[in-house]
Image (tube, rainbow, N blue to C red; front, side, top):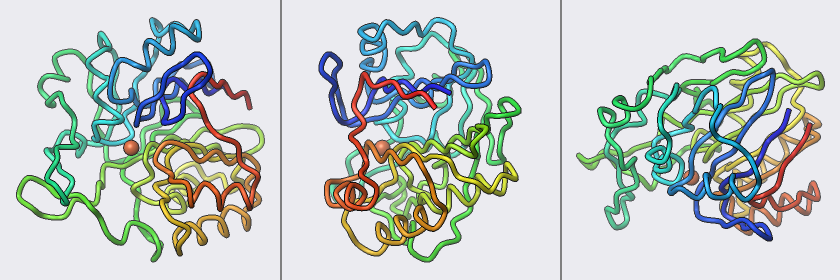
Length: 259
Ligand SMILES: [Fe+2]
């Protein structure tokens, strides 16, 4: 399995960065584009990395936020898998700034073959889109800084993830982790029937070093997770806690990981 970091919040030596996420995942004979960042940066970085985006099998959108899906306008089309709640108009409550997708569902449907599902989607025998993730823990996704157009709270129920089956166990890749990393991993276990967690990578939405970060670290330790790569929306206090506990490195654009 190979993961190429096309867009993330930290720049590599020759690749650029923005607040966003876009990873090319190659596994089980498929090439998946997981998110597109908020601009065409994923494509320009792919060019620098000499990675072709011509023969992508499927695009998977983790959730309907601008920093994960606005890059869709720079793709010609193809199959797009996402949760049906991705296309809603949504805002940051503090200043009512728009944080939903730039393109409407109709505009995207003109270009993509959209496969939206709240249920898990088995992309191959070894690759799963999780669909809507049940929120069961008491320390994750308890509050939200986001609202819908009508002012009602938006808990980003469309936030999903990819679970990959490797010989060593599950590898889970999250976009922004609005559902909570532990909720996501537990659901990946349920969907795939595999208990061993080999690795986790992506945005875990951990900001400070409070209860959620401490409980997440405890969970990863208890489950002997070997590869841990917090990126994108995780902030410095949480990243520092991960470094202290696991010696985690920094995920940068241009990095290519082989597992
Ligand atoms: Fe994000």
